[in-house]
Length: 431
Image 1 (cartoon, rainbow, N blue to C red):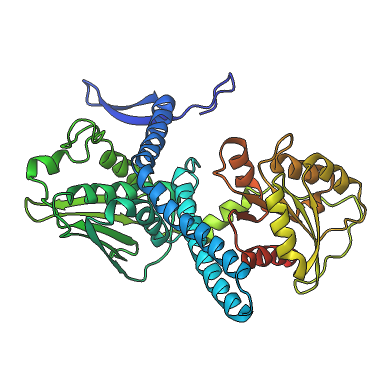
Image 2 (cartoon, rainbow, N blue to C red):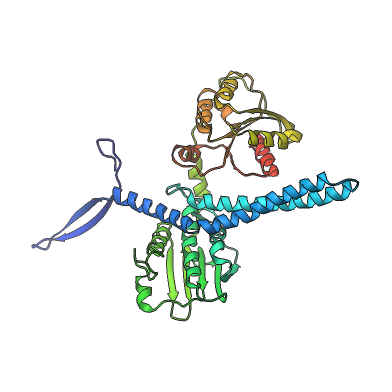
């Protein structure tokens, strides 16, 4: 509802039927302003999500530090092998290559863990998008694995299912809460515990996800209150009692339902059913939010095909990123680097025709963000804005997230691999 003073409030309407003394019926409506309640519920859900990550922070640090130790030591050993190669240069190079290859695998593992953390910590409101339910479940497993590993076994049973339309961060939060609950229920099983995660069609055209544990289970009284806010059977300081109630609210908001099956000594099964999403309709909605592109008033050169040698401008305030992108991209094109976004903007607006096929720009920079730079270019040289590929290494929020929601340009997330960088840049030439 739009008010006269410019405020927008959320109102819930409840119709009532009135019966008069003379037998006639009337209608009445109750309007309730639920704006603050909705805002509070959203903040509560996000706070619970952050609390989930916080409770697992030590384990996540362990998960990251293990592969990072491997990366550091492997690189040091590889350098030592090369320094001490003497006359066995070929053997030393092979051994160094093996160690660097292993280090590369560990670095990718760290990147996946960080990406999973970013997925659940992203505060992207109610934004829905087509997704695979397996992606959210695997992200939750990766974050919870530090809690699961060592005390129980994890079994996956995945069947082929349709895509859904959901908020990936919130769905990951649901699965993370359920996995942590299952792990906590198995703390006394002395290594005999088992968690089974299953994905299957729900029989109604949607998707069903089940998380089962062989823990002590719950009696009927606990089961009745399980989804109530602040209800918990855990010791003081071990839980807020919000986890399952928030899971219930999040699943319901997605048009799904969540059910519990449990009995003393028989473990617990949580079943989440989600309706199939119309991916095409969601894509159309996303596309409709993109800003219109006006004709370019400055002359621009014809862009090359994806296979031609590209001309790349890289804008980033981090020297190590500039150096690695320049080194990685040189076999595929001519690279110009710029640390100062204001100087890059002046150069782009003055050049006619534009000397670059692709402009790789970081989102978070001092003095001028990548979002501000792109918006300025879009206003003054609209067609040139299409050449931007955006980079980010953090979790976008606030104005940056709003910019990304309406921006049609591709985004590549740090850390990225060299093949991914080349693919995204080439795709933006022909896209």
